[in-house]
Length: 267
Image (cartoon, rainbow, N blue to C red):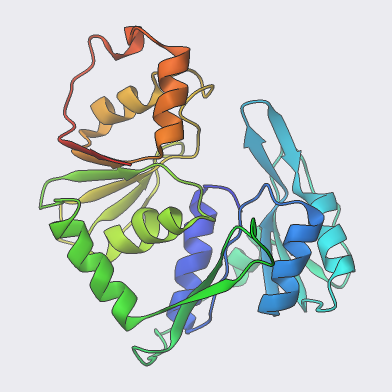
C-alpha cells in the first residue's frame, strides 16, 4: 500500500479489531513480497492496484499475483483498492473491491487486548539475509511513542508535525500514524484534504500525511509549501530527501518568500 489515506484506515481497522497487520513497501519485487507473505501467513491481503512515482506508475498486480503464486501460504481474500491509473484484473472467488468492503462495513466496538499482545509486524530490509519480522506490542509501543512526541520531537498543543516516509517503513508506522494519534493529533491527508480524528477530539494538534516525494511532485519546493500551508513546527525526514532537494534547488530559490514556521528538523 502507498502513502494514501486508505493505508491508515486499514491499519487502524486492524488495531481496533485486535488483528495484527504487516504493512510492506509498495516497491518490493515478487520474491521479497513472497518471503514476507510466507512468514506472516496473512488471512487477508489489502493492496492498491498501483503506486505512483515521479518516474511513472508501478503496477502492483503482477508483483502481488506472482508473490502469492510463489508463496506456500495462500490468503483467503485479497482486498484491492482500485486506482484509475492502473486497474487491477480481479481474480474471481479471491479478490474483492475495497469500495465494496467499505460499503458493507458497520461500526464495531474496539476489541480489548493485552498490553503485551502484538500490534503489528514490521520486516527488516533483508539486505544481510532473510527479512526478519519485528513484533511491536500494544502497550509499550504506545507509551514510548507518546513520550517521544513530547520529549523528543517537542510537539505541544497547537503544533503541527510532519514525518516524510513511506507507510511500509518504521517511520511511517511510528511517526505518521500511531505516534501522532496517541499524542492526540489529527492526521491530515495532504492530497484529498481528508482527516482522521484521534480519540482526543478537543486537541488542536495536527500531523500531516503526504502522498508525494521531496522532489518531482511537482518540484523541490514541495516541503517548503507544506511547511507554509500547514504551519509545520517539527519535521522528520531522511537525509537523502534533503540531499535530493539541495541537488534540484542548490540555491534554495524555491525556499524564498516562504514562511519559515518550522522549529525543528529531525533526520
